[in-house]
Amino acid sequence: MIAIINGPNINILGVREVDVYGETKWDSIKEELEKRALKMRIQLMFFQSNHEGDIVDFIQDNLFKIDGVIINPASFTKTGYSILDVLESVHIPFVEVHLTNIFARGGWHSETIFADKAIGHINGFKEDVYYLGLEAINNYIQKIRGKKNNE
Image (cartoon, rainbow, N blue to C red; front, top):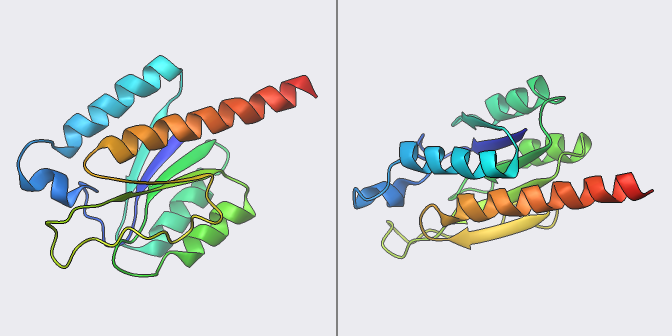
């Protein structure tokens, strides 16, 4: 099971600028992610909260279900350290994704919050960051499982 988490300061779309032009909605991104996950033979769970503590609780509540995480953390702030702490302490691999958009108010700074601990860090425009994040976390999990089977 892969959890896709949109964190503090990210609205439920998780993709504010994607929706600006009315081209792509979260429902269609979610639908496409589910199609891709089905092809990869993995299940997805989605979670969004503007509260860091709720995200920590979600991870802890689903600890034994989650194999990996794709997280779009706080974009404008350097919050999220308790999220990092819980992911790191329970050894759940995660990919950090950020949306970049030159048209966003003040410019989105897509610098990493956790990349030194993440197995991947993906910056991009529109929904591609989620699709690439899904591929990255799945490849990592398959590689780790392959190593364990060959031991």
